[in-house]
Image 1: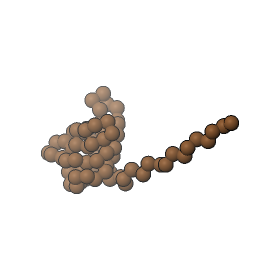
Image 2 (image 1 turned 45 degrees about the horizontal axis):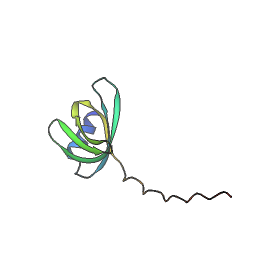
Image 3 (image 1 turned 45 degrees about the vertical axis):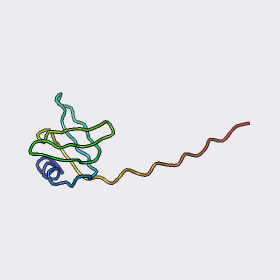
Image 4 (image 1 turned 180 degrees about the vertical axis):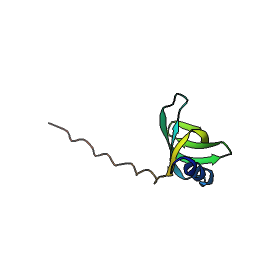
Length: 83
């Protein structure tokens, strides 16, 4: 979803939905926030990411969508010993 459609999605997303939000930084570059949607108010939304809580202004949102849960961690195989 892009632009206004993305903002409408974020305003109505249930808490706990895993989302990715592409948004503009103050310097004009774009970045993504991938994590768990927490809440939204009239002007901002909050996403809990691996980097911490990100508060994103709706005016900076470029695109947003729901994404599936992260994959389960892989089991590590023990390294074989070379004799």
